[in-house]
Image (tube, rainbow, N blue to C red; front, side, top):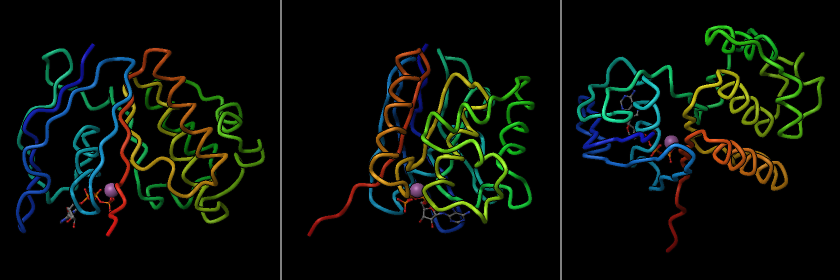
Length: 190
Ligand SMILES: Nc1ncnc2c1ncn2[C@@H]1O[C@H](COP(=O)(O)OP(=O)(O)OP(=O)(O)O)[C@@H](O)[C@H]1O
Ligand code: NI
């Protein structure tokens, strides 16, 4: 299977960002997208998952094996931590996403995979550190069981050991056959 983005532009009143982005990911492959802050990486991620803001207009093609993509096949672990539901414990958010996809979630097992203790399931977002919240966003996206995973800056926040665990989890998933697309900002050096 192959996921393709061709000539993608997202337009706001202020103009198009990104302009004419193209990429392709084979099933089981990890593809990273880099760019400076504001280049439009997160907009590409949101376009893939069908989660663009309502004031955005999208042009260009997003296809899987040539057919228009069903965004439910693509799970997004968003960049912004405020994507978590402030009123729901970690276990509830996970189960909700799993249920929407017709699955059941092993929340504590999934959290253990990124090094978080089982008690994390009972916490609300305001009780999580930034790094923990990042892990919860990823685990929540994975709970959908979607074939394709888009992780937007998945290692920003957690300590080095946890970031390493996140990257090996993504690598294991791709070895297991899920397409992974991950986004990371390039640091400008001058
Ligand atoms: N809802 C919106 N309305 C108007 N402009 C927006 C909206 N969302 C994003 N933008 C603009 O689109 C541009 C790209 O944003 P995006 O979040 O994709 O950048 P990015 O490459 O992910 O940056 P970063 O590395 O800082 O996360 C920015 O200039 C941003 O201001
Ligand atoms: Ni971003």
